[in-house]
Length: 236
Image (cartoon, rainbow, N blue to C red; front, side, top):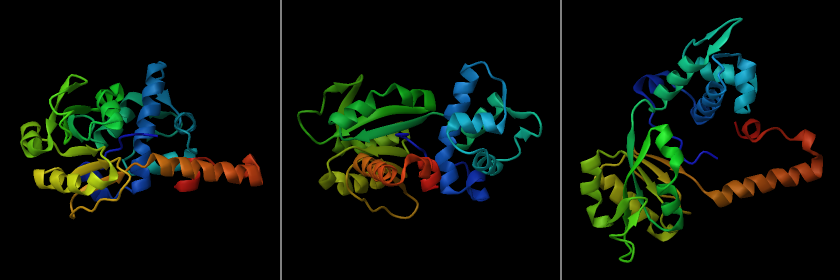
């Protein structure tokens, strides 16, 4: 699972109307291209890239067609160039400062995850309401009180935030983030939050993801594994 998939497309991508399902797969293609580049592969075919990304070639070609014509018939894709183009569409050619609200077990783990820095994401601030956590350092960052949120957002020019609080606190935190000027929220709390138009929210619920996998396992047991496609094929 990709923990952090940005909804902040470039204006050009938004105007082209790239489907949400395609946007969700772009980070997967980017990761696959990075792996190919690390293997010393300069040019790859659509079949090779699709295999590395775990999708079928037709879906890959359709997804990439929304970005432009970056492949050469009979030759394939320039790995480094396509990697740059996808990174540009995902806003990863610049760094994004992020604030995490809620520094319990999950928030602490997210704050020290090394994978964010290689994807243009920098955890700039940590916020909590628990007196026992405020003032302590986690991953080299001092935990600030929620009352400092607006000042933190303005100081770091933060547009993206992560909610890692208990369910009962999620809506109040979302309201505070919106009031502070945050326009994209990744919500790990087991609750649905409502936000005004113009603010993007992505929900990550690990229990739901496990339930979906349990559903597929049940189908495999009943019908045999050959009757089940990949998760990507089922949900796209």
